[in-house]
Length: 375
Ligand SMILES: *Cc1c(COP(=O)(O)O)cnc(C)c1O
Image (cartoon, rainbow, N blue to C red):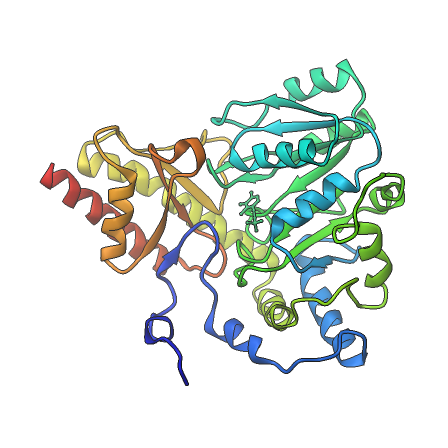
């Protein structure tokens, strides 16, 4: 065995990036399953296990498309398969900006609204845009991983549907950590990636299209081939994918789906709520402990349960904090996009526990105290 000791000997509970997230050893081990032909009964049985695990996580009766790509692939699929017409892009962070860029680069007539990274795009702003002209779809990021902000996608979808506008949801750091009711909220298309709150290795993306969305997807021209959801829909009824899937990752997905079924999705959501609340009160305590104005970047009525961006006082460098945490054996994230120099981020999602979270938060506080003492 030529396994790196640094990997095999690190106990679970040290890696708190907001993606990729830490993967349980038994889930990693599942990837050593044998190769199978992807047109055949053994594969179809594996794929059925994957479906049985994923559907309750998406809270859907619809099939869950599995794309051998990162999440960005299914963001592009959402755009390419939206019925003809203009697309409204709600931007409140780096990933929602990416969604808008994808719409532009696929040649769609895309309008950006919002732009304030401090909050979700207000419903009044969305409504004014929908009043002004027709849109066939809008794009939204449920949990903005760059800011830690959570958008109420249920209220947004109710509003958009009054204007016959489909809702394309990037729930990459939402799904499996924050409630998503795909069927009950009538989401038109919702997608995630394997490496965030699902706590799988990177490399797969999962998405669900409503019957209505997939029925009009064929009208969109220039859908390309690899991300044509019409193809995904045709194959999924045979428990297959259009092309050769990342088989090893599917083994991991089947095992993780069974682990989440055992935990139950409701308890998983509850665990994430507790981790988020604990992180938010830790920021408050940190401010008192060190006497510096640290604060949670996202507004208190719209915070994600999976990731917290912490604003750092100008006298300190987020980079130095992250390095001090690494010295103590933990990984946290730096700031993202235009918040790179002013925030650090803690990913409290996936399979993490309160105990592990307390350890990383203490290491972070110590790193900050050390920097303040030496400045
Ligand atoms: C990580 C992330 C993405 C991009 O995912 P890739 O898997 O890198 O393509 C998109 N949106 C959000 C909100 C994310 O957190």
